[in-house]
Length: 301
Image (cartoon, rainbow, N blue to C red; front, side, top):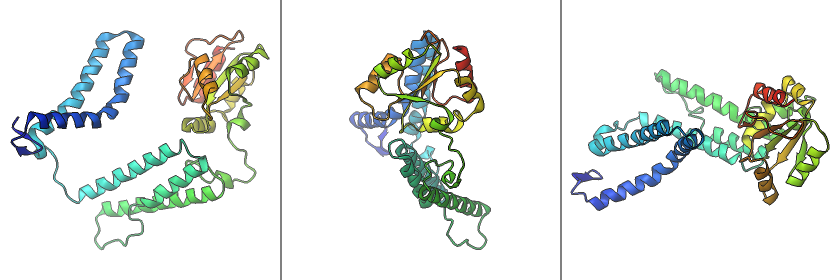
């Protein structure tokens, strides 16, 4: 081993320590694609393609580390003023990701307030005095900062007016306008346990849709904005029994409900025919479009 950490005289123990800590850092980043590849192998049984995918994943992760280990700092770009721009960009991304994750566990209005604070805190020099002869990129950055600061102000107004959606912060100011939420667009019956599910299904012999949702589910709010207000979706579900399995307060009953319908969590839509059987390829997981919901609903009617 010629060098460890850029200094001559490194040891195998030092190299092993660096490798161990690198694995700790890279492990969480690799978990998602690794789980996806293993799930694909388990579902399809295509071991050849699965082995090739795992080999490509390991190659893509390992080659950059080998190159950096072989060439050290010579393989990295030199630091300069451009790094300040990179730091700001990644700082904005990290703060935005933190606000997005926080929006899953805090009330919607609080999530909008967080977005307002994040955007206001990274306004990219919107209030800086432009230097004479500034480069076009600097002026573009300042223009982006002004737009960001304006977006933060709109979100702040949205919080004060009762808004809860970062994409539509001023929706609360539309006096008299109908709210596009699940209660207004589709007449859901809320259930929270297996006995409630069986009781509701026994009330009628119509086809049914069970929609797993929760207040902390960000994707569910997107579905409420894009899917349920759609006229085609409302027409397709008008002849069906529509149940909303509320998992907001997750407890033993919620877990039993998930196990009963073999679901992993919200958002999930399960379509049952008039005899209570789920048809193949009708289950929708994630954020489907209106056309997907209509197709699944028509398949069980």
